[in-house]
Image 1: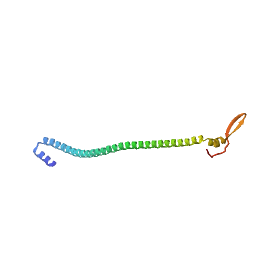
Image 2 (image 1 turned 45 degrees about the vertical axis):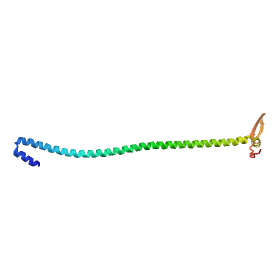
Image 3 (image 1 turned 180 degrees about the vertical axis):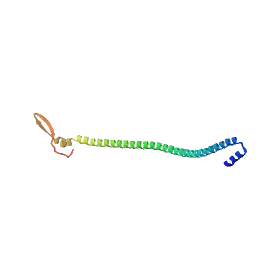
Image 4 (image 1 turned 60 degrees about the vertical axis):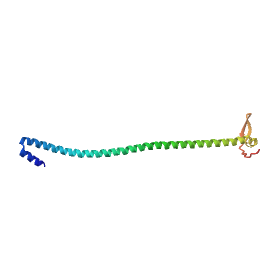
Length: 147
């Protein structure tokens, strides 16, 4: 088609105008080639942009999901901490209960005068050094109780 136009220009137009038209035609051809190349590049960029937008959407969703996970992790760690606190409180309560029971038992034994005489007082003996009187445990183990 280009050749046909050039032959028509040579035959029907003066030479000076023909040369100008041929230059313009060559420029138009280069511009058309540039346009096609830019058009193809534009379509590629549009596709890249669509892929990037899709990836941004996915990453935003993942980021939101990660935010939910960190909230859940915080909630789980708080629950674990609360469970440990509850467990320790229960251990303290049990220790206090056992301590109260033991102290009650010891108090009841200490109120028993026969036990004191047989077990506690019989374990000590008095001795004196330089005029001092002291009580020392004899090492005798008496385990009987009676009232």
